[in-house]
Length: 233
Length: 233
DNA sequence: CTATAATCAATTGTTGACAATTGACCTATT
DNA sequence: AATAGGTCAATTGTCAACAATTGATTATAG
Image (tube, rainbow over all chains, first blue to last red; front, side, top):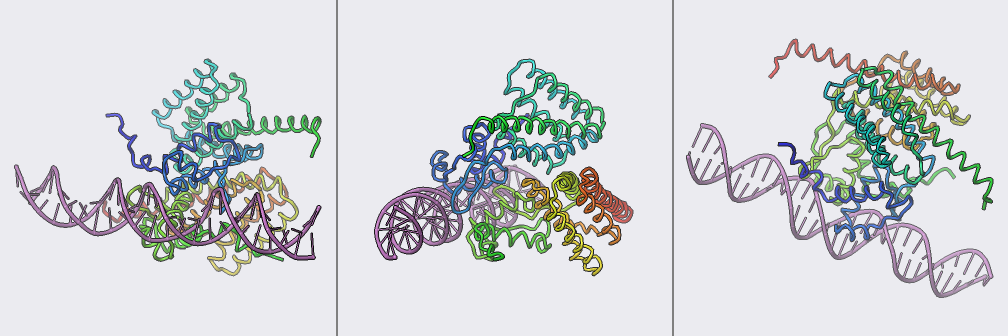
């Protein structure tokens, strides 16, 4: 009596399946920023009609993973430090709101779920498996936002997460040392569980501001290194 | 040499035009929440094919103005106090970020534009024309967010504004007295113009929190009045 | 040789026909 | 009379053909 929801209407639709398939490839890094997407080619590969692909590409455009130049082309969205900056600043305020609401409204069941998500992150960090860590990290944030019960926030956040994953791969943003990672998340988790809304909001914000700082610092470093060596065109 | 931009590629596309037309009707109040949207009917009225309408409805869905039940129907999104609550809480953090960035980055030209937008609001308030006031109000907020230069934020905010307009009509949220309206906006404008980022962010937040409070208060009042008179089914 | 205009292939935009799904209505059976 | 099941019309989902647009290429005139 668990779930036979995998047949749920939404995911039976071909355009959703096509969008899922293409999204996976973009977020994986299989399709790099700027990569051109040909409707005909995708239609052939996924064995659906061009109209269905078109529908999928429109959805991915609304998710910020694909760009369209009307009458001309579809491309995978660009990746750059500026794009990443936009994502992290947005993420900061969205997760700030999510954490605040979560702290205010968490039920006992919610708290248990959050503790579990945190335990997963700790386990992943101890295992040292980088991909597992990233997954657990995102999942913890997703859990916090999910507890808020704010439908629009949850939806926006999910889109944002996908974009962050995409940018991360291509900007090459490194992960911090595991110790700080764990302690940051523990603090956030504790604030939510203990119902300290103001602190939860602030921690969620700060967590993302810190990422922005690191991002800008690294980009600055690279830039100065580049101007030192390379000659401008 | 001003602009012959009305021919710009994007707006020539039939699906965009269709989306614009339908959006206008939803935001106007011509199409109430829950109103069913028949692809065939819309196609006939707008004199385009069903595929084009489909594309337009998908876009409006991503804007939060339309809901889809797969294989079954399209409807205008529901309106309720809860939906409005979601919109205002989101708006609070988005405009908070927008105001902060605007205060940090505003150029002299930006400041002039913002002053102009504020003057427009004052003029509208003095004229007493309610629709003009609402327009000028939204436009002021749009200007602040626009100055931030944050592409994703600007886009999200624009979508949000449309949803707020739609909910406002059907929830019947009243506008405050003009004096407070003007003074609130003057304070925000001044904070941005003077480069006081922290204050700008706080004012933008507070402005929306206040709306939420009023919203919940009115809804509570109505609810208790209803339970006092009507008998539950 | 350069600049301008015409041509063309590649790609996206739009359409109408056909398929699949749903919910309401009708019928038959207990 | 109530209910289970079948039928059908209405509606959405998918497709493949056709139209429009674009950018590159080629031809042409100066």
